[in-house]
Image: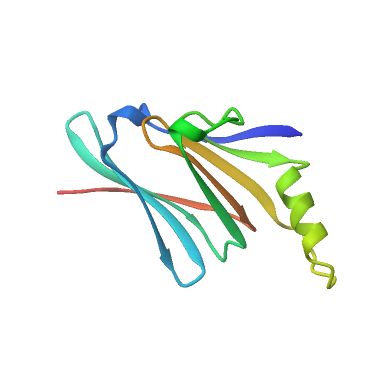
Amino acid sequence: MKIEKIFELPIFSHLIEDGVKMYFNGLDVILSFNYFIDDIKKNMKITFPSALAYKYTDEYATEKLYEAYDKLVKIENSDWIDSLKQLQNRGFDFSRLSHYAIYFDSVGLFQFIAYEYTICETELE
């Protein structure tokens, strides 16, 4: 298993205001959270379009961090993708899918199997 850092949060996750919200828009899975930088309130959304699978593990039950503390990482040679390949024997092409993970302090570990991700940061009033 190889871990590639993709994105580091602009703040320490324990400074996130009102927690991390996970919601769905069709098949897209979205993580959303608010924070302050230099007295400017911002929102960040990390979207996994058409996610095939996702997992959430509470901070108290997280056994493995995948070097994802305050970072979005990509896990290559993923055991999770390998196990999905074993379950699905109808010729589905897993080659373009990736396993992503991000850990937020005082929240937990979020993991996704998806083709891609997008990150959007906006200033709030």
